[in-house]
Image (cartoon, rainbow, N blue to C red; front, side, top):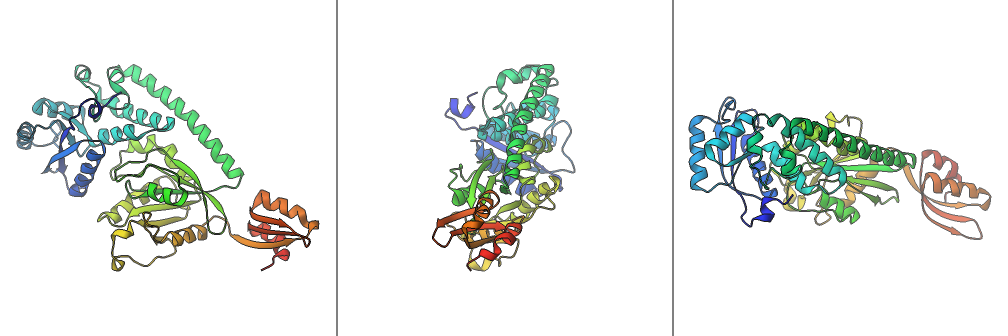
Length: 417
């Protein structure tokens, strides 16, 4: 369905509204909301923050602040209000009635960006399912209002016709989506099983949105993944082969970026994608080192990895964008912490070394001279190791390979180094 920005040249002028209850850093969250609004293609014009013990049940903000918001919307010709919390149907209805301006919440905005970015069949299915889950409890009393919705931020995905359907139809659609997702997940599971059977080692890139994960993926593998300075520039997982300095080849997997206060329903909807990280052999937690919120971003990722059961998986913390920092601001690397710049390649060699050091099995590169009577070992190297080169000579088969401990014991007597 065409969105408002595509059908009308005017970019929506947006007012951002937050209630600061003291439970989280309201200013940092508003700064992120501003980036989200820009990523959705709208223009953040003003922000309004009110300190309250809790949001007002009917109006989200207090009556005085609501009157102020109404005046601001009129004076600044605001087209859209985005609230930095999840709104109830009553709160949305009241805000829209008082201001005569379309109103959405943080979750709807994030879902909208996901709908804009999704390209794969799985991504589109997951987005639609999450949108319908979010929409369903908000149908009550909104039947007439829904028919007024056109294109634009917060309405992508299921589209106008689906928004006008009744609960029964939405439930049926959700079941269909779940069934289709199960088929996709089964296919993904079969691919994963095949990788495990073939001994493919996987390395997942996870982290906060806009931390430079896709830029790192492109630098390492020339994957051609969309890399922009926008939140959620990449939604669909991308897998590419990466050859490490030792000659070992691993499968590098890029995953969707995270944000603070990520709606639980969204985590559930994208669980199959995030499981690529949960089931990987090594995890790279990429963080924007130049962000003042770097530690918070890292904690968000760590908490989600813990929720996904990644406690036993080696995690390497990768502080990216170090080209924006002075040398004095960059701490020394350690066994599980590396500082890099995916933009100019700074620290990439150390990162590859750290990946190799955390591989699930002990691998080593060997130079061999196999006698022709031991040609069977050459076939075993092809099947269980990584054959880098081979040359048939009068003395025997000169071989360069990467092997694990078990295979090394079999070929150790033929090493030439």
